[in-house]
Length: 226
Image 1 (cartoon, one colour):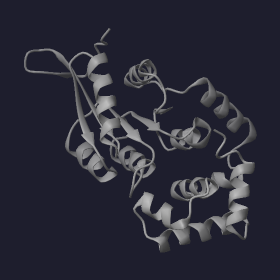
Image 2 (tube, rainbow, N blue to C red):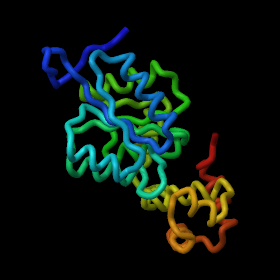
Image 3 (cartoon, helix red, strand yellow):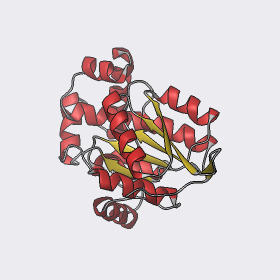
């Protein structure tokens, strides 16, 4: 059943919902696009493959919601999210990711996202999440809700990696997974020198000395729990 929600009106008087789907994989973009068009009345869906393309479209057009991938080459989804919220603070952004909720959810919600869900979620969950953020609410799973309660109860910044920048945190997770610097650089479209600089910052901020210790830290804090 389609949902009829919109703040815009077409020439024939029908209500229109405009979405922007941002992901560097065309298959993912088309899949999300298909779900939105099938589920919402008079939905129009634009696509972007990079953070730069997303920012250009957001600044040039009016959207009701953005569905944004967390990890993309170059400027990632977290950087794009922060830029979007600076210029369009009331535009709801749903973050979609391959990463488990316990890795990124709290971080993206703190950055202004209206919700977070993983790419292995069923289509009905995506529709529910989009409907909720269009109504001005936030979408979080029971797992994220519990994590948020724990985070608030323990206080901000209790864990050393909470003070890392978004890119530093992303590099930490990739190092923890055993990826070498050259592969991380390739996947993020950055130079090996830049990734080595991030690695040095991680060692300094976390009070560690070697890559092996970074990997042990990530595993100890369950950054690769799933």
